[in-house]
Length: 167
Image 1 (cartoon, rainbow, N blue to C red):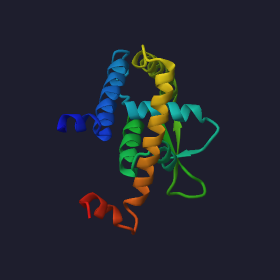
Image 2: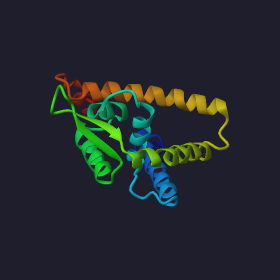
Image 3: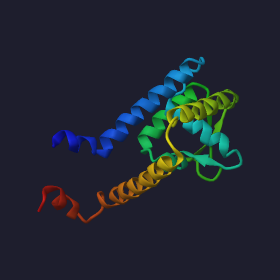
Image 4: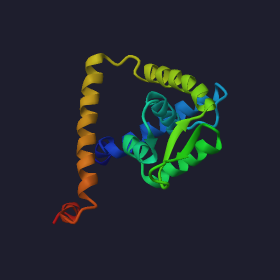
């Protein structure tokens, strides 16, 4: 029974898969001579590249990737140190800094995008279209449920604690 229950702990399975996917991306990029780009920074580079006419701030990255502020700060600091992005102080609010890709970030973007596309193709190999559609519908529902919990838990209503305790 415990073994069967463990198979359905969605957080554990998704976290394990996330670790494998990040590792695959890291290995694929390192194999092409790009060792200063992590999976997270690779997706941020791609995001910035896809929005060249928009002013992008750290808050936008936090929201898009659902990453907490401190984690995004660390990622962006490393990206800036590695010469991948540039931060520019906002004219209207000195506390805000817009993010842009540097020439090096732009150069690496195409390699990153090709790598992401190749990995995606290889990791979905042999899975019929119908199964993929159902998988993504299920992921959407899990994400919706998790999002509602993320809003409920820090709120004033602590009834969720009684639910956990079975009260």
